[in-house]
Image 1 (tube, protein in one colour):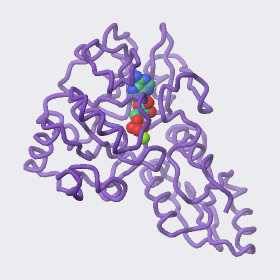
Image 2 (cartoon, rainbow, N blue to C red; image 1 turned 45 degrees about the vertical axis):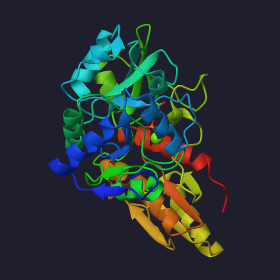
Image 3 (cartoon, rainbow, N blue to C red; image 1 turned 30 degrees about the horizontal axis):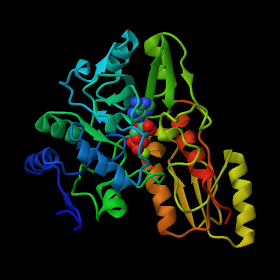
Length: 335
Ligand code: AMP
Ligand code: MG
């Protein structure tokens, strides 16, 4: 199948058995999770993992997340697991939280990018879980998009980005959450959010009984520990202009008179007169998270000159959404 177009299959038991056997054979499979679609390889097969990097165009040295079956033991993958990690795992797994832990020596260097840590997550999507159970091991998977671009939230997105190179895509429907997992690291008793994501800082603080530090602003640490920390990432071709909701309406009026074809994207309640396309989440932050990447992809399909984005409040899921939009906008050229 290599070199030919990938096949999209439904999420039947038969397809999952096929996907598991292909993964065992070192093939690369697009897999649905509740966050975004992953580009999965057998985490114990160095050649397969190398191929994931090649397919994504991802620089070597940037580590992958290992996805585990709910029945798996963290102890097989990580050493000296702090109590805080167990507390977070018991509250949020399976779910959109990734724990960065000291790696067990058995974990492949290709997976950890040569770091002494490994990133682990138990995904909540029933298809991902069924596949992990049938496969019977860890699946190393970054998001199934080309490096730096918008993450895929449907099987079709994976196919559109990587169809020629991935061996199979399992269609588990559109992703429920729609943005990536929160990545948390543990350093000498301190808990740090390396990448904002679908599990909010407030939820994490609630479980730990204290505030947690978030690493923001891109390349603040060296070496870069998560590509999600790169200043420019998650970017469509269409330029994005981020502003507060009240500014968005003014900007829309200005653009209307300038004759540019623009889109207006918001959590809701922003008047978008003159916009060629309007994306409105109806005031529901979960809908905004679930729809965001699809809308950014639509902006490219529509070949808009510009998208004006009214930023959601900086709380709950809004923290991660703003983070993604800020990184997506940094890539933008002016129209
Ligand atoms: P992606 O799904 O493409 O966004 O990539 C997975 C994310 O997990 C990236 O941001 C990785 O850098 C991050 N990650 C994986 N392993 C580690 C690790 N050991 N330390 C820090 N971040 C990690
Ligand atoms: Mg990614």
